[in-house]
Image (cartoon, rainbow, N blue to C red; front, top):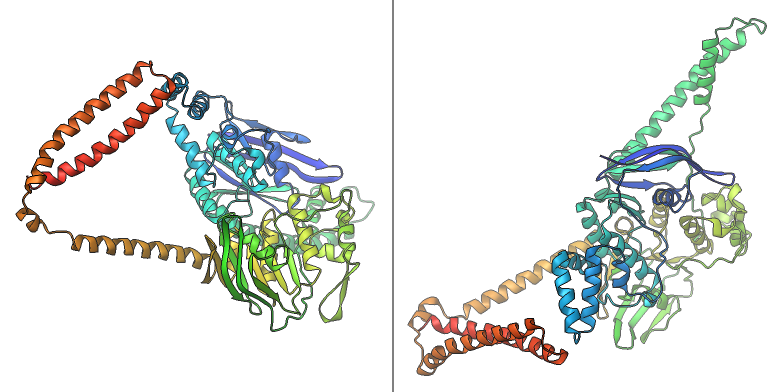
Length: 624
């Protein structure tokens, strides 16, 4: 069943064409990824599909009654709202019932309001919806759903926006970089959730494992054109390579044929008007094919690395805490030349704090960090660079240096350096604020690398970078002779680059695991396996010390135990009667707030006492 049809869609910004006459369709249940280099129009296309922007020409048609929801790169929330109020901000019977119930819980003295909300929840069957809200918020790291949005960080707000889309369950989800600001556990949960979801999904993401597992269709924007591949990310890479090889062969064949046809055209008398018109027309088409340029933009990173001595960075019993929250506890480590270390752990566990201490932005609460004399740090932090208003692209680079030193005494101008980073000459005098999010990150990466660091610290370097730029960056870092520390939620990036992994377990503990991201996940699985084995051994040990059935058969009740056993039945009956009386009183609606709360507390106590007495009665009944 077709959900969306796009026909001859075109979009330009001034003289710059983003895409032209693209056509595609999306069916129910499709999970579609849009891939392209930064600045090629991925986010622009998503905005057009969701109605936030308009195309210059063409049309898009959604099936009647289709509900569409969009996760944007930047969120716009109303002020003075809680997380819960934001994520259930849809006008349905379920959300109205849940909002009514949540308000009643905040004011338990108003028994009339509580009872009305309880009945509304039952009538609309909103309990399942409420469980879904709580589950999704919990999986995305929110423990207090009544926390105000104004108190959240930018990354937390992005997660609230994601939760809202997932909870709304639209027919089509449009997701722009949904894995940004999620920790690794959250990404794996989201991956599983979307894989099982029946929703139709259109997304932009740089996470290649995510693309591999979730998506069944890839749309590639290249040279203002759209190519469609029916398969996951691996299939796309294979078919893209095949398409490029076929194009090369077609151009080569057309060039050879064009030489023959060109000679024929030159031999024809100029005055003859009876030339074979069909052959001449065919030549024009052949010429258009033969003169095609296969545009192969390949980013290069030709920077020079400063010499690195034997003493690099040493951490001696380093500790860090804020108030009562301990992030790092007595951590020791000595970095060696060429090491590439990945850092993983939940959001807020102290990963960025460790980086900030190494570069001197924060001081340790205890211990010391020693930096070698030859170490030249390059720090790429996740907040990005604060560009000046009205600044042009080339001015950002020239402000640092007009010429960039390269290997073997060579140097490169700022303009040439920009071209190596896929900023063509016609973009050099563009305003920075007009760049896409990925282009800004690429420009920021340039400013870090052009200082020729020999110790790179990269905090979420993959956010907003396209998968093509990531490939070049991976190749550069793989051959980088200095040290690299990477904090990233990109599993593919970590798997390809790091030698070992610092795992922030919480409560200040950092575990050094030999290997990449996959080794870290295997370590966690082995840890779970060992914990289960310990629990099993402990259980068996308890069972060994438990009297055998034969021994139990010989045991008889003492006189005191027999009296206790006989009394238990009467006590349980009395508790059951009291429970019925309390329930009738609460349902009558005549109790004031204090009395209602007191009865509720007593009900809980009765249930607990009944459970204890029933367990004791069952134990004694075996010997009665």
